[in-house]
Length: 200
Image 1 (tube, rainbow, N blue to C red):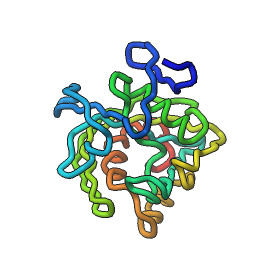
Image 2: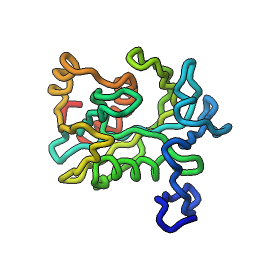
Image 3: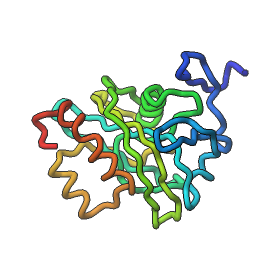
Image 4: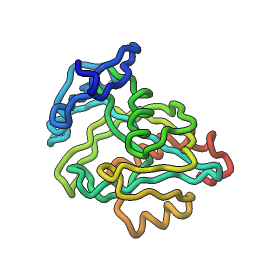
């Protein structure tokens, strides 16, 4: 392994190389979330989809506003839509928590100040705009955002903090990711514990 290759910490605490973009593998899982194999990222999202491990992060500021991100226009999946703070897939053997922390820092240019588990949810959502399918066993996380972000433009077209009322208004004018409502509903108990006075 070259010392110049990007690395990530696996669930066992060992360091593993981050794969090249064209070779990214996802963990396939059964309905209970047990790993049963791997698949190349794009192939797992082709109809009818293959159930795989994912994560979704919701970060908030001190006022309890949710940090949303607009996905970069160059993304092959759901380009330009608004979604939760960060979402993605652990590398095979990487814990969902480590993946969520790593990917949030990579996309936003700042690690979360606080991050905690918020349960799991499974879903099977086709995306009519792209023809791809989100068939995921999703690990949810909530936390506190860093005071400032420096998003990677290859990943993020824009960010904004919103109140619950502002999110409701955004829904009427902007497209949201097909998974957003499902993961937010599942994460709401943890969100309300984190920001009890924010009206979520």
